[in-house]
Structure formats: structure tokens, C-alpha cells
Amino acid sequence: ADGTTPTDGSTPAAEAPAAAATPDPSTLSDEPTAEPTGPSDVSWVTPRLQAEFAAYDCATAPEDDGQAAPADRAIIACSDDGAAKYVLGPVEVDGSTISDATSGLQQSSQGVSTGTWSVNLVFDGDGTKQFGDMSTRLITLESPRNQFAFVLDNEVISAPVTQGVVTNGKPSITGNFTQESAKALADQLKFGALPLSFTLQSSDVISATLGSSQLTSGLIAGLIGLVLVVLYSLVQYRALGMVTIASLVIAAVITYLLITLLSWREGYRLSLAGVAGLIVAIGITADSFIVYFERIKDELRDGRGLVSSVEQGWKRALRTIIASDTVNFLAAAVLFILAVGNVKGFALTLGLTTIIDLIVVSLFTHPILQLLANRRFFAEGHRMSGLDPRALGAVYRGRATFRTPTATTGRGAAAAKEAARRQTIAERKAAQGQATGSTKTATIDAPRADDTSRDD
Image (cartoon, rainbow, N blue to C red; front, side, top):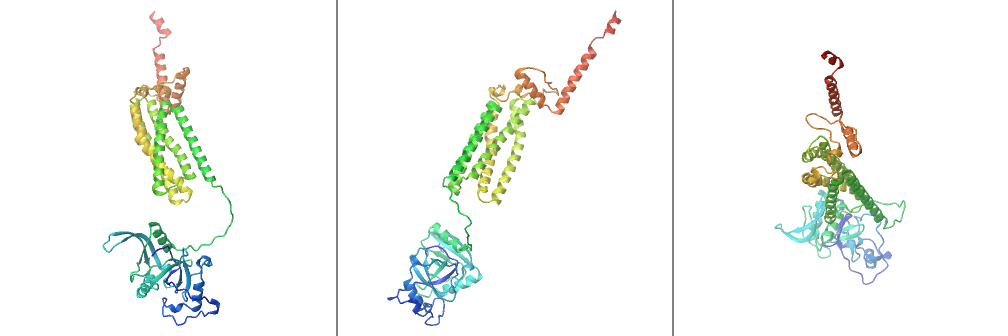
């Protein structure tokens, strides 16, 4: 058995010999010479059908009109490649009785794979009985009458030879199949021809380079966004911004490798929507770094050392990062499950990069900051490190004391303003109360004029 599919039905098949002379078919009788005793009876081949078969040319045969094969007369049909023509008896098993069709490697009676591909069918109750009766009859006939044909759209997709009686409704078709041809046959046997018709509403000619140019524009937009994030990181965090850049590079490499792997293993193709997901991921990844760095700055403002600030800031930032990434991943998962088309590509890249963000910030960014916290450049709060407590406006001094910002000039003034702005309400009230207490003490201790006169 070689070939492809059916679903109009399976019918007994036999190649009819060509007549020596070809009379005009219209002058011949279309009535059987004898009453047919079964679907395989040669009496179905009327004189007119015999003449039509002899003159039939598969290359010039009319297109199928979409009608199902009749159940009360024989027909002429060609193979799907036009290499053979058949006289087929009436439909005996309808394609709608096929419950399932799968392809796989054939196994011997001992359960060992033979290395050849086969198509395995499963019939429903009616189909099981009909196919069992047909195989019981065909196994006793000589070739080519022991063949049956799978017919789809008036084309013989496969015409296997009956090699055994199948009464359990689970026949198997074997032959010179490849994995692709076996799967194609199984799919067509299972689903058949779709009962659809199409009406042309509009027609447009689109340049083949349009999609390529749009994809290129998307990649350029992503590159611009990445450059802006890098510049912001360097301006806002100075040397600490290099950690952001390194983390983004690591995330980009991992993303590229995973996209390449999906393309190789699953046939994934990066679309414009997928590029949009990657662009959004740049912001998501940068946001995680910003949250972490700002938590470290908050700890420095509270008077902690850098090593302690990194650890405490990480504990506070991790909860926020996990919550944010969880929301993003759930949104991507819902889109991927419920959406269709290009939206799936967006959801896939968004979900993938969200997971990568959590991995990079946990396994790369945090360990790198732990190492940098012990380096003199960062530990001593160099002005270009991005972690200078004076530039951050550190407020808390320990032992429940607070520094009240004083009027200064230059860089110190900016730090003082930042310190005042960063104070919480409780810190501001405590500082004001401390300042008021100091003023009252100075007033009480000052000598009064009347005390001096008494001493005299």
C-alpha cells in the first residue's frame, strides 16, 4: 500500500483491461449484463462503463464535483498522481465510520519494531462490521479484485491489497511509507476533506519584502530601547550601571540560545509580535535591576554598611521582583493559551524572557553585587561608584538619632536636599523634636541678668 488518503469511502477496486476497439460509449448499454451479487462482482462493469474506461484520460479528466461516490453503481477514478485508473465498485464502507487514524512504526507479533512505517485505523461499530465483511470477501479473490480503494474527492489515494481478515475494526496499512507520507495519509483518513467553500472578497498584492522590512524596523526599535536603557543606567547609577549592562548581555545571550533551540527543535519562527515581546522584556529586566539597586540605596540611607545593604536590599527586592515577574508570566501564559496567530509569538517571548529575568537577577546580578561590595572602590563609596552615601543623602545615624540637613553649597547642598526629601514623616518629626529639645536646653542653661545682680 502506497499513497495518501480517503474519506469519501473505501470501495473494492479493480483495474479493468482496455478494449481492443473503442466504440462510442453513448451507443452502449449502461445496464449490468447480470444482477450483481456483491460489490466485487464484475457485473457492475457495464458495456458503456467498459468503453468509457478505455477512453478515459486521467490528465484531461474533469474536476471533482464534490459529490460522494454512489452506492448503487460502479465509477471510474484515477490515482492522486494520475498514474493509474480504476473501475471501482459501489461504496461499501463510508469514511465517516473511521474513528481514528494514526501513523507509527510497524511492530512484529513479538512487539519488536520492524523499522517500517504504517497507518493504523480504528473503525466505529458500524465500520467494524462493514470492514470485517469486506475483508472476509476480498481475501478469497484474485488480484486485482482483492484490492480496495480509499477515495477522496473522486481520487484514489491508496489501493492496498487485502492480506488478512480484520474483524476487530483495527486494520493496518503498510507499504513504502516514509514518516511524512504515513502521517499525511493518517491525517486525511482521520479528518478527510473539509466541507468548506470560499468566496473571494478582495485581493491585494503585497511585496515579499514587506514582512522583512517590518521585522528589521522592530529589531532597530528594540536596539534603540536597549541603548536608552544603557544610557539611563550609566547616568543614574554610574559604575553600578555596568552591572545592569552585563546582566542585560547575559539575558540577551540566553534568550538568543533558547530562541535558536526552539527554532531548531520545534520550528519556531521569530515574528514581529515576537520581537515586540523581546522589546517589552528589556523594560521588565531593567525594572528588576532598578528595584534591587534602589533597595540597596535605601539601606545605605538608613546608615548600613555596603555589604549589609546588599544583603538586606536583596531580601526586600526579591519579593517585589518575584511578584512582578509572576504577574507578567501569568499574563503571558493566558495569552499563549487563549490567543491565536501572532499574539502567541508575543506571549511566548514575553513568558520566556520573564523566566530568564528571574534567573539572571538571582544567579548573576546578586552574586556580582556581593563581590563588588567587598571591593574598595564600592565599599568606600567612591563618587563614581553610584553608592556614595553622601550623594545619596544618608539620614539615619544610629541610636535613634537623625541628622538634620543643613544649608551647604555645591555637591553637599544637593546631598542635603536629597536627605531632606528622602526623610519619612516619622524621621522628620523625630529630627524636628531633637532640634527643639536642643534649643530648650540652651535657653535654660544661659545665665540671667537678675541672677548676676543677686551675687553682687
